Length: 335
Ligand code: ADE
Picture (cartoon, rainbow, N blue to C red):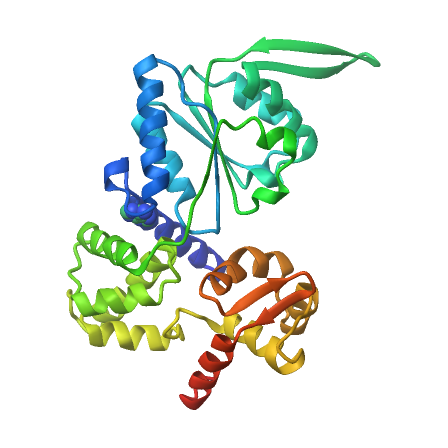
């Protein structure tokens, strides 16, 4: 089998495991307490009235459980869920076909909704507002408008960039919720749950070690758990000890704050090449050969959250804490 095919198979398998770890109902979902308590009210009230839930927009950094939450909402509302990705819908007809196919109470989940092409997005306006579909079809040199009444449905949009959503789209969501980074205790709870689902016991100290290095992100916690499990299983053990966890995390070069190679290069570049900032993100991205959007969406939110960088009108600035952290790592000869 070719290496690429093997990689694809491995990724598919990892994704399958990841999906099996997802909570199905709100009471199994750990963390995001205020978001959950709001949703409980909105969903309970809609169920009581026999109506569909209002459209929901969930925004926040990647890996925090936006998709998981969409499935949880579908289960709680007893609706079928249809999942699509913003950038994969290129033509208005593609979205119209999906909308026309929905049944009453269905959930349409659009991930990365900020990347929906504008013409496609416009189809959503009347669909969201009064379940009407209005599309223009070209016909013998002229065109014809087709109007269709849709089944009442709930749109759940997820985005890492709420600011990139157009005002007309954003205003059509009745429920707008931010998903935040999880605290260490919540991440430890998610790891304990994962250890149960995967039938691999883990010590409390190993759990806490992984939790500290997971950047407040369940997807990272679960990925680290699987890698740590690999180290234990390779040593012919089924249980994970603190020693296994330490060995694996060091081998994966995830430091005590959960920073990886890209974070370190990002911070080091600002300190060494731009005197600690302020510096524009474009300049940092080009200095370390990373994509601007990847840095902005994936890396910076956590660095901001733990206070290693600040955003100013003149650009990014690293904090004293970042200097201290990197120096500590330098002493440890991590890089
Ligand atoms: N797995 C991933 N995210 C989770 C969460 N928030 N609660 C429980 N299990 C999870």
